[in-house]
Every structure is written in structure tokens, then in C-alpha cells.
Length: 303
Image: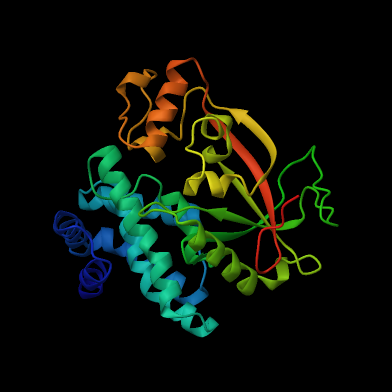
């Protein structure tokens, strides 16, 4: 497994410093009998069953990290790097391409980079996000990621385009990984792939796609540059609900840092960053929103 991990970091083009730090952390894990015992058991269980309990994985990989004397967030990150080996076998059995696996595993690198920017070290402080990839309920399809889900709005029934979608009905959730720009044509290409790969989520040939994100809040709608990629993305969604989060827990996603409560502490490079900072300075409150779009296989259906 030591050689596999080294090759994994090379294949996914990790930063040179990340390779040194993470390989060193992995060496400490694999060279510590008790720590590696935790990892070996988790890997063996995953290889036997093709699934796992996210809670147990995070707990036991944390115990392994502490036993080996590395950061908790490195232990929880590295166990999923190990799992990637068996996940590729699962993709092959399913008939999925290696590129799909590669695109999914790029998310590990994205999260490691985010951790370095936000926390100052290599690893991941959001490893609880990874199980969806490794239990194969979330697929990376081009620029976007899609996850099997259910319509979550309790009070609002979506009643448009001949559809009647209520709480609990099957929908896809969409996620936007970091790491690159988001050209709208790539967004549409991802929707087309989702239409192909999730036929069981169509209703009379129409695919409902939901998004719950800080992007779908008035703090973005009122500040984003019109005609930009983000503007095109969010305006495809019918807004279902919106809620404020004054402590701005999603701040790190845009600004690579937690919110101090003072907008003047936030960087202002980039038009969206500048817009959000000005919004906050004027007393605006950040938050999140939940929306839905309908895709017919070729295009987003609008009014």
C-alpha cells in the first residue's frame, strides 16, 4: 500500500510539499503496528463488502492517527486515499470508466488544497464528505458531482412542467467541486451525463436536479456579475427556500478562511469576493438556499 499511495499522489499531481508531508504521515501510520492495525481492518472490511460505516471509518482512522502521532485530519484523509484502490475495482465491475474514477478522486486533492489554504496543513477537515464517493452514491460527471437524494423541502411542493415533486421524492443533488472555473457549457455537459447515468431519477423523461448551497442565497444573487458563469448557473434554478446563517459557516468556501465577523478581514481579489464583502459591509446577512431545475436531456427547461 505504501507504493500505491506514493503513485496515487503522483498520478493526481499533488503539490510537491503535500507529497512530502502526506507520504511522511503515511509512513508513520504503516510503520506503527497498532495504527496500521486500524487501517488494515478498515481496508479489509471495505474490500469484502464494497461498503462501510462512515462513522466507524472516521473514528478508527482518527484513533490510528493519534497512535501514529500525526494530525487527525491526515489520518481521516489518508484512509480514503487507501480506499481509492478498491473503489477503482468497483468502478470497473460497474462498467464505469477510469476517467470517472479519476474525476471523483480529484476531490481528495481539492479538499487537501482547501485544508492547506484554510487550516495551514495538508489533510482534510471535511473528511465526512468523502463516503458518498466511496459508497458510490455520488458520481463525478464532468465539471459537476451528482448524488442520489430526495426532495427535502417540507412545505413547498414543486408543481411545474407537469411534475409534482414533494418531500421524499427521488431527485439528484448537484455539488460544485473547487479546483477550476465553471464554464456554462461544461455545466450543461455535466447535466447531460447525469441524465444518462441516472435514468431511474427521471420523471416522464425529465430529470429534477436540486442544489442546496450558499450560492443560492440573495447574498450571491444580488452581488454576482451578470452574465458570469456563476450567474448563469444559479439562474437556472427555481428557488424553493432560503435561510440566513449570520456566522457565515461557508465563508471558507469562497474566501479560504473562516469568518471573523469583520468583512474587512476578507480578501477582495475577484469580483464575487468583492461583491460579497461589500454586501457584508452594508449589513447584509449571508446564508444558503435550496433550488431545483428540470433537465430534459438536452437543455434546462425554463418558464
